Image 1 (tube, rainbow, N blue to C red):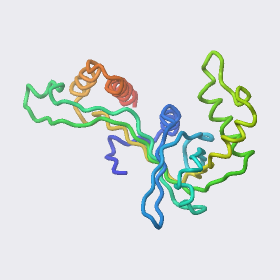
Image 2 (cartoon, rainbow, N blue to C red; image 1 turned 90 degrees about the vertical axis):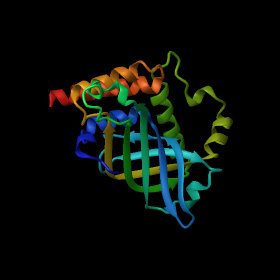
Image 3 (tube, rainbow, N blue to C red; image 1 turned 180 degrees about the horizontal axis):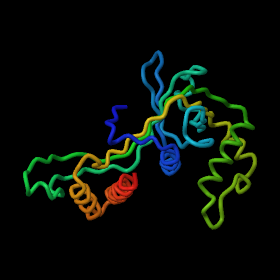
Length: 216
């Protein structure tokens, strides 16, 4: 991934927080038939760094898993909220006009060695763990015991597990860091007024990034 130094994020704790807040990542592999991609939720074991493990599952009916050789190279892309940034939001536009439109976003690319698995105990452990993570804050968390056992067994038979051992992590937050502080603040304010959840999330990310940079 192309990452200018002012957009680079290397803090493992921040990258881990971002990935765990997104969860859904696109698995991309390459084989005899070319590229194949599947979006799926991932369970991260520990902090996201070299040697960590990402685990998820795909539908057995999805041919992707059959195209994955044991230990094949793979890429998982985690994308956060994104938004268009208008040059009209930059105060410097009225001073010199040397500003152009851009796009703000956050992304993490994870490379690693991937393998598939289909033994029922491992699949059940994965589904239990994912469900626990996603349900823990709900008043009455759903568990596998809420469904008939024969139905759960049938559903487990309809999925294939995917496990990646991480070899490389790259993170890019393109949030107007190279702009003058007043222009970055103007962009954040403009996005906050847009009214869409994505634009407001980017505005909040811009404000947090400004605070992070100020504290450095």
